[in-house]
Amino acid sequence: MRIAYVCLDRGIPLLGHKGASNHVREFIAGARGLGHEVEVFCTRVGKSERQTPYVVRKVKASKRSAEISGLAGGEVSSLDQNEVLQRTLEQAHGEAPFDMVYERYSLWSFGALEFTERHRVPFVLEVNSPLCVEQKNYRTLNLEPAARAIENLVFRAATVVVGVSQRVADYVDSRSHRRPATVVVPNGVDLDLFSRVTPARPGDSFTIGFVGSLKPWHGLETLLKAFRRLVQESPDYRLLIVGDGPQRSWIEDYARENGLSHRVEITGGVEKTSIPGLLERMDVATAPYPALDDFYFSPLKLFEYMAAGRAIVASRIGQVADVIQHGETGLLVSPGSMDELTESIRLLRANPDLRQRLGLAAHREAFQLHGWERRVRLVLEIVSAASPASGRPEVVPENQPVNAYAN
Image (cartoon, rainbow, N blue to C red):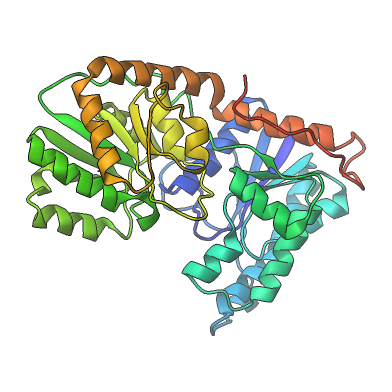
C-alpha cells in the first residue's frame, strides 16, 4: 500500500527530539516495517543530520501568508497551507497514486480530507489531544468558530478516526457525533530500539528516573518532593531526569535550595536512540502524574519503561491505569500523592526481587502487545474493513469495539 502521511503541526518537526516527533517517525517506521511505502508531508523537518529512508515533502506557507500579521496572522497562515498541501499531494499522487492518506490532526487542517474526497481514497485521522481546547486554554485561539467548524468537519468526514486514548475518543465523538465511533489505538514503542536493554545492576546508589517533557502536568513537583524525603532517609538516592522544558529552571532551583544538586541530573533533550542507555541507569522509572480532571494522554514513556524492563511507579489515572497492572507490571499510586510515591519507591529499593519481577513482566507485555508494527497493523485492518475495494465509502459501516491491549 502507498500511504501519504500528513502532519501540518508547526510544533512537531519531523526530525525533532520531542515525543510527538518520535511518535510520527515511529508510526511511519511501523508502516514501512509491514512493507508499505510511505511519503511524508510536513511543515517542519527540523535540524538533524539524520537522513530519512522515505520521501519527505515540505509544505511551505504561501507568499500571501508570509505577509500576514496581527493577532490572527498565524491562524490565517495555517488556513492557507491547506491549498499548498493539496497542490503538493496532487503532484505526488500524479507521480504514483496513493492508496490512503493518514493525518496526524492539527488545527486548521482540512486539505488532506478534500484531497481524499476528490480521489475517493480512505482518509484516516489520528487525534492525540483536544486541540481546540488546548489552544484556547494554554495559548490563543482568535478564530475559534472557524477552528471548531473545521475540527467537526474532519472528525465527521474521516473514513476512520483513531484516538490515542478513550478520553480523546470521547472528545471526538461528543463533538462530531460521528458514526462509526472513534477507535482507540494507544501509542506504542520501537521494540528494536529496546531489544538489548539490560536489567539494572544492584549497586551502592539507587537511581530514580523520569523521561519526558518538563511540564506541570507531568507531576515533577511531586517527584522532586518525594526525592527530597528519600534523600533525608538515605544519601544513596539519585534522580535522573531525561528531557527538557519550561519546568527545568524550577527543578534546578529546587535542587539547589534543598542541597540536592549533586544528586540530580537533567540531560536535556536527547536523541531517541539515547533513551535505552539512559533507562539502563534507572532502578525505578516514574510517571507521577498529578490529579487532572481531563487526562487524555497515551504516555509514550510508559511503553518505553516497559520495553526497557524497568520497575515502574506510575499514577493510577487514565490510560496509565489500563496499561499497568498493579503488583504485576508495576506499582500504581494515587495521582499527586507524594506519600504513596515515596513509599512505593522505598518498597522497590528494599525488594530487588520485586523490582526484577515487575520489570520482567512489563518487558514481556511490551514485546507481546505494544510494538508500533502491531499498532499500525491494527489501524490498517480497521481501515480495510471500513473501506470497500472501490474506494472511499459513501457511508462508513459500524465497527466492532477494538481492544488494542488484547492478544
